[in-house]
Image 1 (cartoon, rainbow over the protein chains, first blue to last red):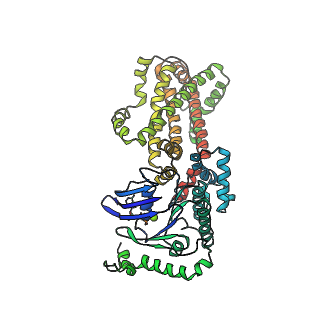
Image 2 (cartoon, rainbow over the protein chains, first blue to last red):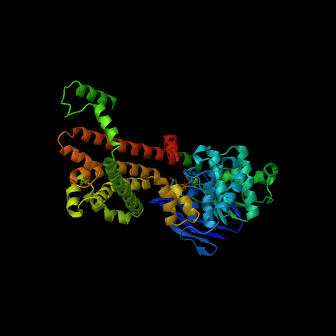
Image 3 (cartoon, chains in turn cyan, green):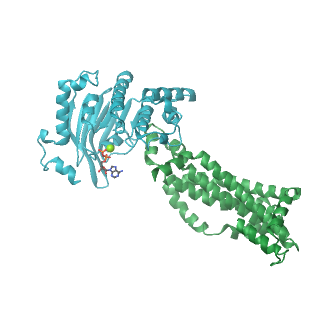
Amino acid sequence: MLEITGLGHSYGDHHVLRDVNLTVAEKELVTIVGPSGCGKSTLLRCIAGLIAPTAGSVVLNGTAIDGVPDGLAVVFQDYSRSLMPWLTVRDNVALPLRRRGLGKGERRAEALRALRSVGLEDAAAKYPWQLSGGMQQRVSIARALAYRPSLLLMDEPFGSVDAQTREDLEDLVLRFHRDEGMTILLVTHDIDESVYLGDRVVVLARDPGRIRKELTVTLPPDRDQIATRADPAFVRLRAEVGRLVRGGAADGGAADGGPADHLASE
Amino acid sequence: MAMLFLASEILGRAGVVDRSYLPPASSITARALELFGDPVFLHGVRVTLTAWALGLLIATAVAVPLGLLLGSVPAVNTAVQAIIEFLRPIPSVALIPLAGLLLGSGLEMEVPLIVYAASWPILFNTMYGLKDVDPVAKETLRSFGFGRGQVLLRVSLRSAAPFIATGVRIAAGVALILAVGTEILSGFGEGLGMFIAQAGAAPDGNLDVLAGTVWAGCIGLIIDTVLVQGENRMFRWHKALRSGAS
Ligand SMILES: Nc1ncnc2c1ncn2[C@@H]1O[C@H](COP(=O)(O)OP(=O)(O)O)[C@@H](O)[C@H]1O
Ligand SMILES: [Mg+2]
């Protein structure tokens, strides 16, 4: 469905991404992990067609994207800035549904249903700035899910919610992924989460941002917060991802004096 | 305000200044209230307010779209910048005689002048408000497939609305000054300004001049209060964000 070839991006002469190659199949859930500042958000912006990459191409369903593709939803890392402060929570969620050609009543009903799925039906009439950060984040997730995109990009979508809510939202995303058959790319810096959610985990390295390794997650598709995390395959995978994110010594190519020093020097 | 009232009262009553030159505040107030029952005077006020409202309406209808255009299309902005830089320093009041020559008197000359003067604050506030729009909010709507026009309408305009409203409020004050001022300076026609000008020309008209001025002041105050209330009510979100962000 999605083919990223030789993708690179620079802001001025600051090379953020270099030679990223990634293929994502229809209905796949790919998680992307990497240290902060390695270009994860930039990569998602390129895929969303919000910025034009300075090198390479993104091909979606056979056509090179030039601008924002149809049927896309993005959950932004800056979730609170991506909500419209002049609209109520319900109207925020309902707004993109205009693009689906739904009438006002249907839009509102869909919005309420999505809000219920993230446990926020009581906040529907409030304004985003009256909610906590975690609640705002759930609103922006509800907005994306209500839209029923064919491609969903999520940029650290659970960063501000508490542990319990986080697990609920992870399972919600898995459920939507299974039921609606959407393709999902999810950026996270949580190693456990990348393995728990992903069909595949892509580990990025920084300076410049590039793919360090791709790992196929060999876990049964039906995940369970307790059973899956206790699975020996899960434990082994998360250890490997952890090594790759933290050290990179695992792939033997760290000629740059140890990434820990590298990170600290930035 | 109260001090001024008291000072004028004492000065007037004590005969420190000539009573017909500076009447005591209580007489001015009494005369102003009396005018409230004067149909000729009220007709004049209506004429002035009509010119004010018409001018402000047209100014808003012109300046907001122009501001959106200038604020969102940089190429147009650079092209028009020179014209703006040339026109802006001209005080609107200085144009009154010229407008009188070209447009005669009455609404036909009053309204264009008001439009000209009132457009500036609306134009600049619209452009300023557009600079303040959160790029992430725009990206969000773009990512859902909304086009440029839709993003302009649903994000930029909505986000700039509090600034635009403030511009309109400033423009409302400017428009009132221009409406009354034009009438006073043009020398004939009708309106509140005309009432003040005629009283000024009459022997013993000082009381009417002051009472008329009190009326103009009160109208300005009422308009401003109503608009401030409206802004507070409509843009609660803006206030909440401002106070939360600091
Ligand atoms: N709009 C921008 N202009 C210039 N530099 C940017 C911009 N956005 C991000 N960067 C820089 O690019 C690098 C990668 O940023 P980002 O993609 O946000 O990384 P991540 O999401 O992995 O933390 C950072 O060094 C950041 O400072
Ligand atoms: Mg990021």
